[in-house]
Amino acid sequence: MSTDLSTTYLGLELAHPVVPSASPLTGDIDHIHALVEAGAPAVVLPSLFEEQIEHDAMAVHFSIELGADGFGESAGGFFPQLDDYNTGPEDYLDLIRRAKAEVSVPVIASLNGVSSGGWTLYAQILSDQGIDALELNIYRIAADLGLTSEDVERSYVELVETIKKSVDLPLAVKIGPYFSSMGDMACRLADAGADALVMFNRFYQPDIDLETLGVTPNLVLSDPVELRLVLRWLAILYGRVECDMAATSGVHEASDAIKALLAGATVTMMASALLENGPSRLTEVRDGMESWLSDRGYDSVEQARGSLSYSSVPDPGVFERTSYMKTLTSYVPTW
Image 1 (cartoon, helix red, strand yellow):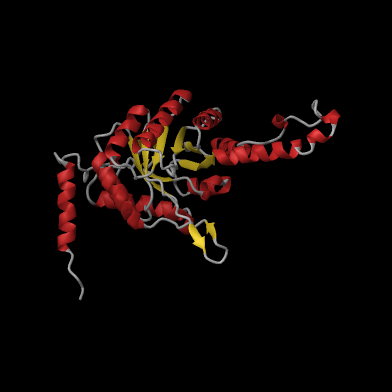
Image 2: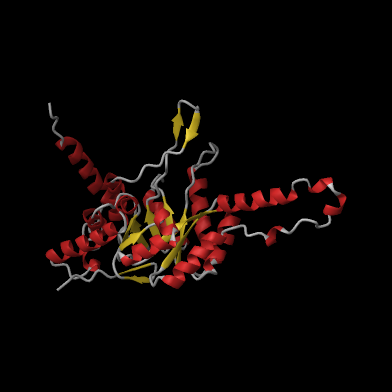
């Protein structure tokens, strides 16, 4: 008898818990079809960036206003209104419309904004297109030295509260791990309305070009070792935070997805492994998960989920401290 791989994420019934996360692959309808054919139970579209939308709109606005003051007759409306131009998230909205029309799995949009007004406006725009859920991709570097940790944390919580009130959609929140108290922050986000936490956002580090003396982007795909941090917090939070949890960053093989499931993940998400190996890797991970669970007598993913979490440990802090000491004291030098 095969293991039941079905799961529920953000209230959506999924065939299994291996989901393609936001990446260039999910930003193209042909690739979306390929992922669904490979067994993707849902797709998370790439992030719609508020800055990109504002840049496009302002670029057109600048071009139509250039020289407007040089001719008296133009000041009263010679140039077309900005609304007549196809600015804003039209390509993204078209992708949503095509995905909703052409594939049968849930479509989750992703939004990455910088201002409360921008987040709310674009969340409503995306909601109007019939998306099944929304993922807030919060990518913020607190470079203002006057900001306190409480300022930063409050901004996250208030943002989630605002978006949750503005749209009637399941809401996932993708965050980074760099909070002083990740557990408290997870609880606050769930209380604010997050239906799921996506752990963790990867903060890309720029490099310096010594020839040009310029700052250059430096995109490095994830490595399975990054999953360890995710596993730690999945295990700590499972059963103690009232929301779903998605594991992302470092899921490359079936073994990675299985570990995340055992630690407490509702779903596991993949991007780098799919970019490197193509949609077939998703099929391999799903089949590998099913084989492992079946061989060990699990009836369902629900039975396996969280079985290696901290939920049965009275004091997770003590458990973690013991593991830390054991790790350091057990290492044997090779020379």
